[in-house]
Length: 254
Ligand SMILES: [Zn+2]
Image (tube, rainbow, N blue to C red; front, side, top):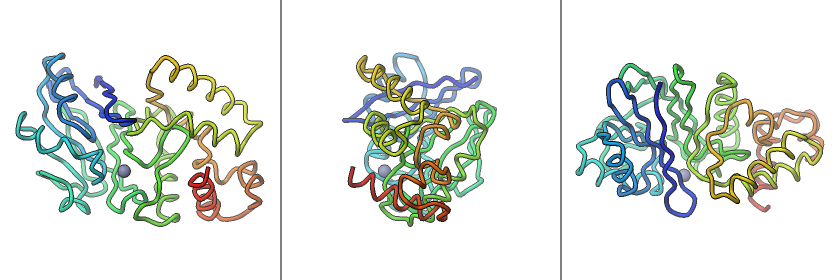
């Protein structure tokens, strides 16, 4: 079993350390900063093997070069963004694999937030690191891609096994939960999850990981083909990508 450490950094970012106790290999996902990663590595007497970047934004890559210099780790990043991500050693495409000990992460292309955005999916441990694409009860903004692309990416992720643990890179859950409740005020799963998230945040606890099942039940952006969501938007029977685009537009104004 892989061990996961959640490292809160900056205002609302998470860096994740993935450690394989058998091979002793460790990966850092989206290191916004180097020092907090070095601190957690030292506390656990772990050596860093890889950095895994999901996309090029600075708050996912700013720690790359320092970590490489100080630990000798290898930096793995999406091929489409390899020229704008610092220190890349290996560029990966969709369906490439990254090994952490005997555990395999498959690269999934999920364009939309950026054009080269990827997720890293460890099927054997049911773990998904999805960067800024799906958030707890929300999704990333479309800075580079189209609504059609983003919807296809979300649709790809929601088809992963229901018990897959979902690790996203930002703590936006409380605001997202209020938006979800606005869209589906009668959805009991959303009502209950808002309470859970309120309690966790009151205690300064992270709301990650989520699961694919929880997101399918409570994340409006994964529910654009549900009648309630379509009715709220006055878009019954519209194509999911169109409903998604309208929902994203409303969230941007929320
Ligand atoms: Zn981003």
